Length: 263
Ligand code: KIV
Image (cartoon, rainbow, N blue to C red; front, top):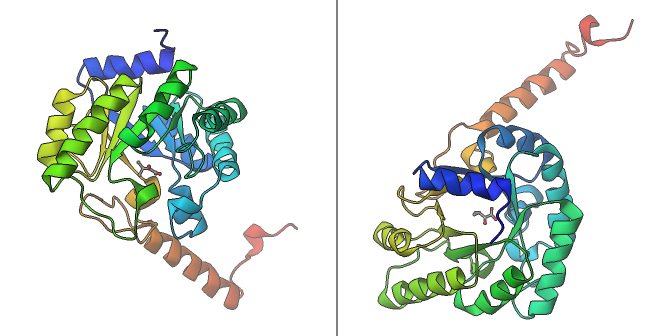
């Protein structure tokens, strides 16, 4: 199988046991920064809740993903870029899935698409990979099936069995790597052991081949709370303090000062 340079670089890091840095990005300024650090950038459908205040990732559409992916690709030329296929654009019909995946890749210049699910969508994944689309899988907690409660996956035998089945089916369908979300650690470790492709964790295990977080979450810009989320800075407070200062200076006529006016 032909592997482009970006995928070769990712697999080389995995073979050297160097953890992969994966970040989400929806906008040009974040993409420009992420391009310096990331091995993989995901234009996630979390863009809906995070940037647009939508209730769920289910409300995101193809045009929204394409617009954000274009902005990201423009500013992150070095990094392998993955775009989420929105809910309703791939699950039921493999020809429609191919048309939509092709549209995403050709209009944005991204490297791959990500689809959520295992057994239920494995024939769609196979169809896409056979037609040359690079596909990233996503198993465990699936935000597009999210019913309002962000649950940890893998607590009962049925879920444990299902996820191993999902893993095998996705691997056999040709995925390049898999995102594993919100899964109890022991099960995540079993998945990593059994997997032939790199596993990127979010709320899974430090043994994953890489880790991903939503950038706005790790920056403390969203209200999202979860055991797995580490907030590295409280950007909400920093922004609020700065806007408060600006407001006060406008009221006191301290801004704009001579320095900020055209003479
Ligand atoms: O949409 C997204 O940002 C994701 C990550 C949470 C992995 O799927």
